[in-house]
Amino acid sequence: MQAWVWIVIAVAVVAVIALAAVVVGQQQRRAQLRQTFGPEYERTLRMRGDRGEAERELAGRFERRRGLDIRPLGAEQREVYAREWDEVQARFVDMPVDAMRDADSLLSRVMRERGYPVSDFEQRAADVSVDHPGVVDNYRRAQSISQRSAAGEASTEDLRQAMVHYRSLFNELLAETEPADAQQRRAQV
Image 1 (cartoon, rainbow, N blue to C red):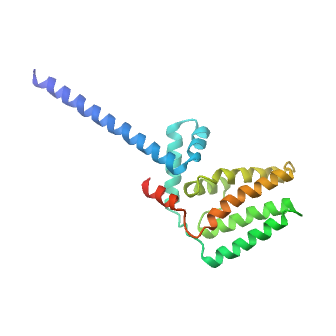
Image 2 (spheres, one colour):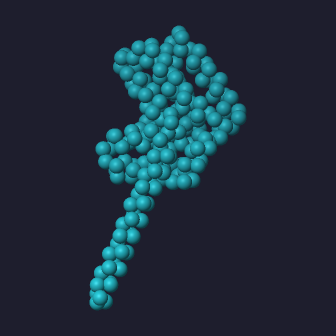
Image 3 (tube, helix red, strand yellow):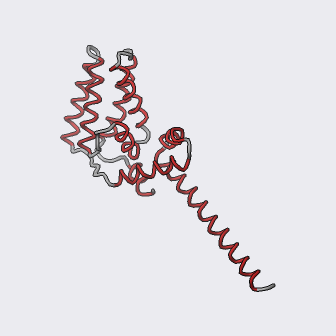
């Protein structure tokens, strides 16, 4: 065989190997994003309608989160917030709308103290989704009920559900340390 044939074969082999490496890399990244974000991966994919765009968004969230100084609460802070939550829950029976609104406000204060920016709800949810992907959907549902309540369109049962949803994130944020699975996910991505 002539030398140019061997060169073409070598170039083709290198191209196939490079393509295989790219495909394997994409598959690994996809698997890692799925593991990191859990149900939030599928939600983002549905919202974006394009896998590449969804994955770029999730990777961007991860990078943004990496730049935040998220810290656990001290024992005294946790106790104070836990007592406040108990008071908010106790008010629910007599004033469910006010209690739900207070739960949202308390949750925002805890998030701010932990180091999450709280100015915009969607950004807040995106930031929280990196560390708490299992409960961020609950947070969105609670927020949706809160908006319906402000418009006078939420039943007492809806408000109760909002409280349950808020509590799921509140409990995770109040945890003494960052969830171990969140630490592992960030270390791997």
